[in-house]
Length: 282
Picture 1: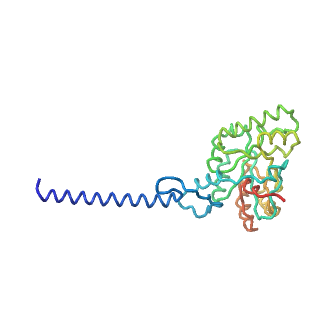
Picture 2 (picture 1 turned 180 degrees about the horizontal axis):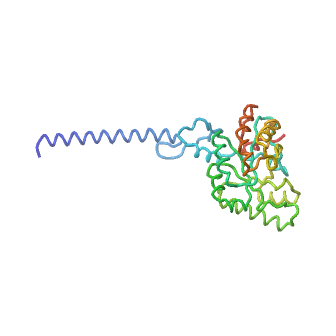
Picture 3 (picture 1 turned 30 degrees about the horizontal axis):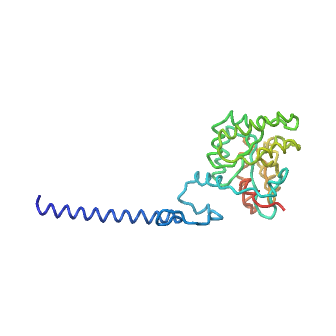
């Protein structure tokens, strides 16, 4: 081997050595930035979790990941909410409202979701068991998009006309249907037609469910005028309002952008039902 070749190999080895050191330095630097709670020997340092996540400053996640994180980090329900028989409205000392959708899923579900995603707002979907079985892909789309889901009975029968065993069976089938498409915690139950009694409430609580009704209802299930639907919601909304809308209706879908913009114009934040009910109701 010539002296020139030896020198060339030494130079290459020296360059490779320097490059390795540089790469190790870069890896250590980014590891420190990404995992500041880790010590130099790989043990987790005691660090307090942030009390609030700035969702508007998370450029390194895509929109779908952020929506999923929103759902997974929903706050706990307040003690006053958990102790209540049922809830019609959230706390009235904050300008926040929750939009909820009943009766889904339907073939129009994905279009509803598209509007919500366009405006980057949360909503809560109360699903019917037989509809989940009929439209499983649409139901999964709700969950995969990061939206909160609750149960709205299995077949939309009036539960107060049923005996105890039939009511219990309805809850079991409803929960099984929802859990077939969602691994997330199910917190809420909404009785069909808003009809309930002590037996229905008691069974819901046994399943760890809070009965959530509403205080703003544009009756969009019987009104075909999207403008009337939107105007009713915007005018009647107040602090802590739980807004009732329905899936599978073209007029409701058309009204949704106006509802969102109108609520914003009045200064309301639109949040998930869990977030609305995370504060104590006085």
